[in-house]
Image 1 (cartoon, rainbow, N blue to C red):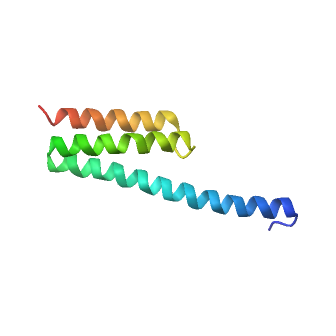
Image 2: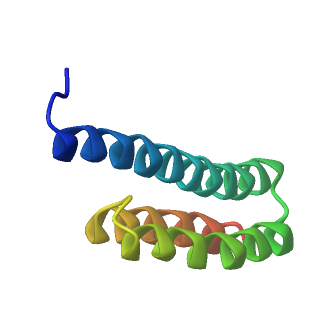
Length: 88
């Protein structure tokens, strides 16, 4: 348990950051799920629109430190290739 004032403050800050990061991660996952659902339905226009909406959210997660840069790049690459394959 935190004893010193500094460690108590760090514990409070960690709780706040955890809540913010959790909300941001949830929002990103929601956008990614919308892309997955559009791909599953076979609607390429909806999938492209959902992908366009998801990309800035995912990259914002990178700049805020929620996801690693390579993780976001991998997710975007795989999703975009799947959306592109719907055209064929």
